[in-house]
Length: 370
Ligand SMILES: Cc1cc2nc3c(=O)[nH]c(=O)nc-3n(C[C@H](O)[C@H](O)[C@H](O)COP(=O)(O)O)c2cc1C
Image 1 (cartoon, rainbow, N blue to C red):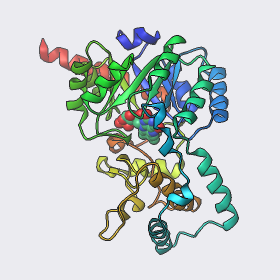
Image 2 (tube, rainbow, N blue to C red):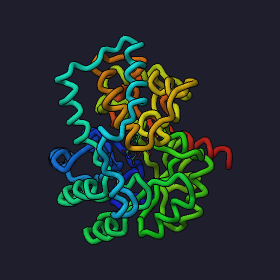
Image 3 (spheres, rainbow, N blue to C red):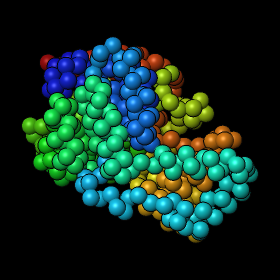
């Protein structure tokens, strides 16, 4: 395919795949697209390990990383938190009672202490922590860095460009996209509300062309709701130079999700991908579950700000729920395309299906215009 994003990276297909799973990253890049590894909850050692593995398996194809980095390095002071002090008793009790009432056993005390240590270690939201991971990643042949938490800091853009690494950032509104452009980003990812994970309120159909116009001539990737070839075709028709996808890869044989969550996804409808603050503290589209529903009930406490609510979910909820695989409470970020996911297939097959359906859509359009 011809697209400015293909030219920018020397790739065959302007299909970008966000994934926390290194296998998906490798397979997408080998299929002609661009795999981008999400580094949330990693530390520099894990980054080094995963990128070494990718380098060994990707046959020299390009790939990138996605980081959670606040806009300014001096934003850091209030982001390092002591979870023990920040978790209000009322919230901890609320979650404990919710799970006790559902007969989900508490963690054995020894396991709980160890798990808590691991969870605290994995919450790396400060710019210094993100930067340490980026520094590690920059020693590998990464071609792109994408920032999820707003406009990337100037220092990050400079360091990346000095190494010929392109920089992109996610935007849910045209004015956010303009800020990314002013900060020197090489492209913008326009994320419609349909998307899995943190997302805004504007639908892709409305958002994509408005961001394309706002940042012109900067190329834009359409994200949120791309699960099939007709949606890929729609993004291109609306002016995007490619797509940025996340949920689509969760159904693949290579993905990181457990069989229980996959099964839940295959049973879900689009409306089961709910927008909730109960998991991270920010609006996050995730698979419907009893933990999230409980926060909507009358008398429930208000959810906590990020990242404290995220810590609460991991420490008090997720670890207990996953230990006994309590299906009603299990969840994972996923977008509205979950309603279209029915079977496990390989990454290669996903790419093949996307392209075939896109070509059919083009023929249909050609026939209508003839
Ligand atoms: C399981 C999952 C985890 C995600 N985590 C992140 C993240 O850490 N950083 C980020 O920039 N985006 C994250 N996202 C959002 C994706 O980057 C992307 O915007 C979104 O998946 C696109 O919409 P789609 O899910 O409809 O394909 C995540 C999405 C999913 C499904």
